[in-house]
Amino acid sequence: DSGVTQTPKHLITATGQRVTLRCSPRSGDLSVYWYQQSLDQGLQFLIQYYNGEERAKGNILERFSAQQFPDLHSELNLSSLELGDSALYFCASSPRGLRDTGELFFGEGSRLTVL
Amino acid sequence: GQQLNQSPQSMFIQEGEDVSMNCTSSSIFNTWLWYKQEPGEGPVLLIALYKAGELTSNGRLTAQFGITRKDSFLNISASIPSDVGIYFCAGQLVGSNYKLTFGKGTLLTVNP
Image 1 (cartoon, rainbow over the protein chains, first blue to last red):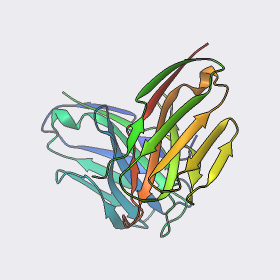
Image 2: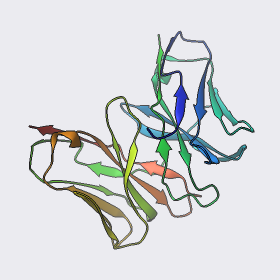
Image 3: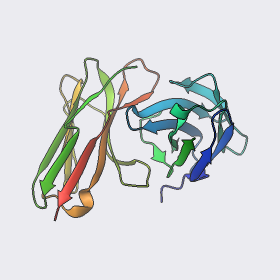
Image 4: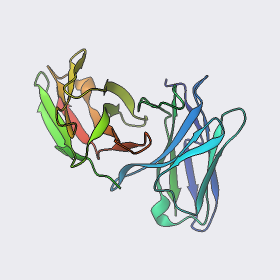
């Protein structure tokens, strides 16, 4: 158990819909990262938050947004869903905020299926 | 985005055999890490490397940070069935503001 909690574990929805994925980082970790994992693209970095502020952006679509709340949990919002958005979405947290070393603790992921 | 070339894509070996996989890039990295992902789980960190030439072991696992800072390898000795999973290399590119780039993974299957 990494200490990172993600909900829901599985989600099935239709094209055009909007979903919210939730992540609670490990106790004491200030940084939260979101990754998308698909068969053809591997693990793709989406976005990072540190102590409530956006810190780095990766290949995140404009239809996707995220935020980190004062209690440090984070939500990833996916809207106008398309079939190609079907993937595993991982949240990870880091024990070091400003000087990250790549040591990430991943949750079990949320599997999104868009029909 | 920056690509890490991880090879092989998959391996099917017999229990007891040694395994070697590697990652290469055309760019220089500050950090190399190796993660393992088992079915239904998120990736778990195995080994982290922070200096060029660094050789680090974790039980039966050994990894090295290449001298050129553009590559890394992971060796697993005397494989066992529970070594099954997907192994990912990951690196922090110089000047990337600590972003972590992942390779596409090596799927390891161990035949008992």
